[in-house]
Amino acid sequence: MIITRKRLLRRTFLKGMGTAIALPMLDAMTPAMALVDGTNGKTAVRLSFVYVPNGIVMKDWTPLATGKDFEFTRILKPLEGFRKDLLVLSGLDDQNGNALGDGPGDHARAGASFLSGVHCKKTAGADIRAGVSADQIAAQAIGAKTRLPSIELGCEDSRTVGNCDSGYSCAYTNSISWRTPTAPMPPEVNPRQAFERLFGTADLSLDVETRARRTEYRKSILDMVREDTQKLVKTLGPADRRKVDEYLFAIREIEKRIEGSEKENRQVTPLVEKPAGIPPTFAEYAKLMYDLQVVAFQADLTRVATLMIGREGSMRVYPEIDIPDPHHPLTHHRNNADWIEKVTLINRFHIELFAYFLNKLKSTADGDGTLLDHSMILYGSGLSDGNRHIHENLPILLAGHGDGSLNMGQHIVYKQGTPITNLYLTLLDRLGVRPEKIGDSRGKVEHLADL
Image (cartoon, rainbow, N blue to C red):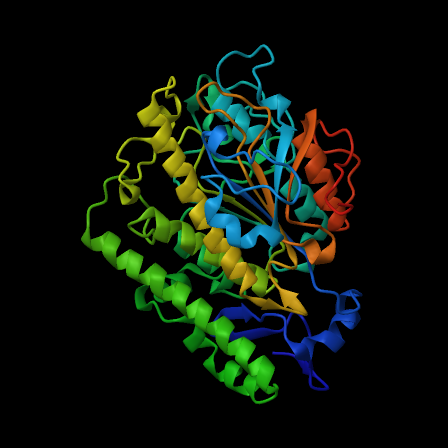
């Protein structure tokens, strides 16, 4: 732990027994931040992409009115309490998700092109090729400021090799994040492993014996840094002590939920193959992954994240909302009213979980505001109509205020043919990252700040 003239550096860690825990933004850090990275105390902006598969029932997604007086639709209704914190964006396209002469494979192309704007090569072999994704362009530019350049999370396990969609590699359906055109960033679907990556060790190359010992005893990382914690809190004011206490409590709650899930998975034979540490219900699973993002942002471990709620072509079932049918086949409803209703309920369920994420961000203090104030969270899918595999007029939400750089609370409809990569170019500009292009981008979008 580094304390200089009673001022804490932003990268102060609690350390002990091979473990290091970064701290959230504290009042005691503000004077030191400008000395460390030249920020003049300005709070960092975070960027997150949440991806949902298989498209949306658009008639129950898209508001009828534009501007500030739009009504929340049936699917979006759980977000009504966040009206002033989000934008509904219509009219954005992913043209490179279309066949363009390559025939079937829309799910693979939807996932691979969503953040890159690049038409992926049709292959089921090792010669995959897509494009660098927007999240990784951001990570490569600002990742050196944090312990992890980015974190990629997912809620559905699947292989990344072989044929997953009409001659397209599984790498395309299972990864929306691409570090290079030939190097996807597969999401981490095991909460325990994601937790260990974020908080487990000061040295990610910790020897196997030490890792095995930690696995056997499952000792809380908070116990390992207890002595350092006690030294730290004595130097802090009341407000900072409360922030540290709330933050460490959140970490311990995540630990408990992971440990509980591991015990349940050892006692119950799951219906589908799952790695240890995944909760038995999807809602618990998604909330746990959302919470990992919150604490990662809170501690400034990373400023860039992606979360795949499911892989493209997902066959997940949702018994907790009385839908035992696999998701993907339901989306090919052929106008069957019962199937459309089930897809609508799945879409709304996903939004309810996203509302949980936004609420956690909004209730977490960060500098002179909250994490939601200092974040840009994009939620969407690479397909609009899953029945017809449409890649135009995508279902897109943008939440958070970007540290005051975004003017929220509207439904905006963009001109037909506007690439969604134009939006990414605009968001990265808010981070101070300014690539010439992202995939098929043609410029920035309007109306995000000048409403």
